[in-house]
Image 1 (cartoon, one colour):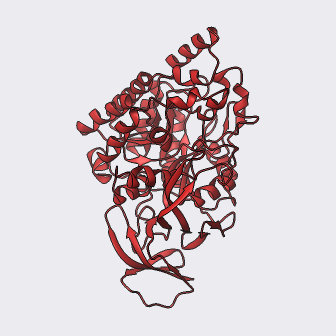
Image 2: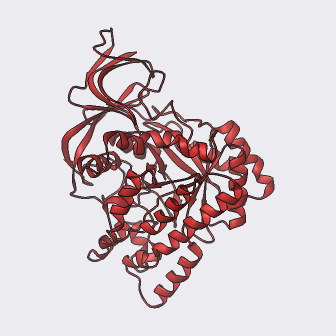
Amino acid sequence: MKTLIKNGRIITAVDDYIGDILIEDEIITVIGKKLEMEADKIIDAKDRLVIPGGIDAHTHMDMPFGGTTSADDFRTGTLAAAHGGTTTIIDFAIQAKGTSIIGALDTWHEKAAGKTAIDYGFHMIVTDLPQERLKEVKRLINDEGVSSFKMFMAYPGVLLVDDATIFRGMSFAGEHGGLVCMHAENGVVIDEIVQRAIAKGHTAPKYHALTRPTKAEAEGVNRAIALAEMAESPVYIVHLSCYDALKKVKEARDEGVPVFAETCPQYLFLDYSDYEREGFEGAKYVMTPALREKWNQDELWTGIRMNDLQVISTDHCPFCMKEQKELGKDDFSKIPNGAPGVETRMSLVYNGGVVAGRISLNRFVEITSTAPAKIFGLFPRKGTIAVGSDADIVIFNPNKKMTISAQTHHMNVDYNPYEGRQVQGVPETVLSRGKVVIENEKYVGKAGDGKYLKRSTVQLRHREVAAAVH
């Protein structure tokens, strides 16, 4: 099967030119001007941007949490991702305390097999790591293509691990080409603050935010960086939400410490005032970390511009208002933490970043695709438009406008946190490994189109890793 994309404005993290792309089977084979070649399918991309498919390095499909399960499974979640211009997700498999890490990976393979619309990989959430389990970590990195591991400083009794475990994990992963991703918040102190609030009868959704101070996140980030330095290992901070935490990342990077961080659209476009909505509406915005005061947004955008934040992922973890968020009707601490976002990321970031004049087109591609591909061992197979790369390509209409709504989105959730917001910039046609899965905004693929991706090790360490994403 040969596909020819003609007349598009091709944008990568470093390029910007008008050209044509020939795809043979799954791979980009020729890029040039005015290509005249036989093809089974020709796509005219005149007046469109041709960009690498988005990579969302932080999703939670079919994830058990707080007595329920996230509303999107690997079928609905990846179909929604494709509609939004994302062609690769990296989801989180979860090791339950005291169980096999390999067994956890097998469970998540079963959840995803034959369902996905796009390609996918896994990180591994590690909840305990005695010495005898380190060989499983090594096997994941060397044989299973899982080269990143997430650890939590939050959720005591469920996901939280102590500092010794974090240090052990960082040290071992760093030595074997792996990377530890940290949920950095002081969960032990937060739990104490939560209990005090409930004792005072403070049960409304807004208290989710009021019991999770930015200092608790900053302390966690600071500790994660210190542990990584002692372990002589790089570290990746997930879903950074506020200036207090960003300041710690910035200081460390200025000193040459290999620390990377992502933020998410919710922290760039939503804020604490959403918790003050009438009735139980604020529950829609209960996620961790919580939404912050609006002034933090400008600081995060500066972090994105200055490369102190390298990636925008979604932390897509949707729960329906009916029957799921309502579990916390009388107690905010029982509201499942999470919100949908895998479908809206690319348009939101284009609109709020490029259209608003905050970032360039090249930076837009870098933070939504190229940098996550480099950090998580997928580049140059993913994350760019180059000869030999997978033909994960989005034909993006930079001028078209759409209104975000739960009525029209494809995520399996009964609300949208950005309901009614108009954005400019819409993915029209999406190719996953050369196969058109979205055509003129309509899904034309099938479940099982996506493949599992074995990711390479993080070969470069310390300053070299930092240089790789500069």
